[in-house]
Image (cartoon, rainbow, N blue to C red; front, side):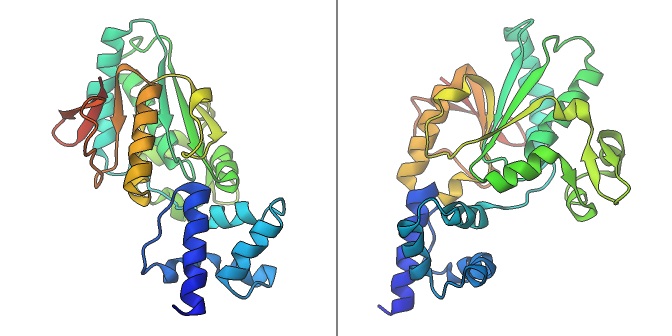
Length: 275
């Protein structure tokens, strides 16, 4: 094994321990593209030197910068579309029927730059406009991510023209955003008020989050090992109220854990109901 291979292996072990992400053998290019600027800024010549510096100076902020760079992905608005239609047409009406007068609580896990939780807030807004007075206690969306930098950006609720063009219709853009003089767009206050952002590593405890009626954990479990994925799914189940729902990504499936989740076909799409 070359020194470059050894350094990559050392970095892979660091990243998995830090945030659960498992890098494949062929991901050197991804690491290079995401970390080259940081390495240059810090005057670090190799991944091995990077890991050793993090271990030697744990309070330097370098660890957080590396995790931010490796985990931050800009996501789409209303990604895959169907989960938000299922939410409006099936999950919210079912919640109202079984929990009259209660507030709907949702968790957007690994929320990245905020597109998912704000899309959820827009979907709730659309439901409320079509079903006046039905969701009387309103809704709360807890959005979590491990990246402090990306959470700060998500809290600002401000996006450039390129970002708002990814999955957002012109109608929704004009209805739910305010345009700033700079040409950037900001999510309107009523939509922002439903969303509470919190820093959370999915490897850590969820005890402080409380209980949820619906959890969106989409397009993140694919980065974890099978054992870590299973552990996360078990702990998500513990946050769901009886009969609550888990929504995974379009390319993700819940294999196993039949004692915890029941698959529900929605045509299109699948959701998993907590037993």
